[in-house]
Image 1 (cartoon, rainbow, N blue to C red):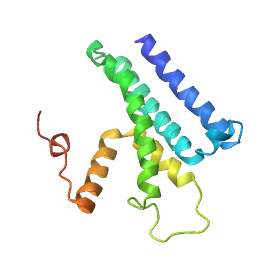
Image 2 (image 1 turned 135 degrees about the vertical axis):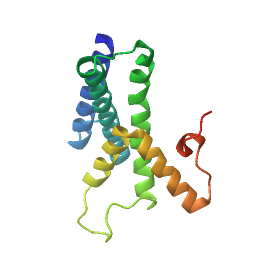
Image 3 (image 1 turned 45 degrees about the horizontal axis):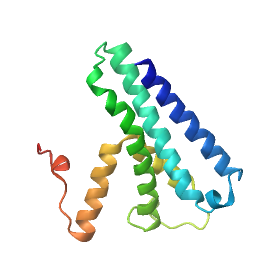
Length: 151
């Protein structure tokens, strides 16, 4: 469990550090040119690390129900959270998800970053929302997982 906690803290600190360096312009030009998508990816990772750290705390300290069978989940979940952060950027930029009822010329990147954090924090609900959008927009059926079916 200690390795998992160290891994999750390292992911969170790395993401926060890279996000900060990106936001203030300290990264190389090729990195800076990807600006908001990189920031959303990193913010999704922060959300995922927070969620996993909370899971460790709840399962190990509060419920006293730590199960070693879940270890791979704690390593993989932050990676999935990074990907969901990046996907949140794509869906917002494409206009498939909206942050405000009225477009604002003064809106900032904070809405993008907030949604990326939420996407990383709650991957399951985010994927369900994306599947809802895909079904409404293109008629794509939801996955069996979203429908509550077993494999």
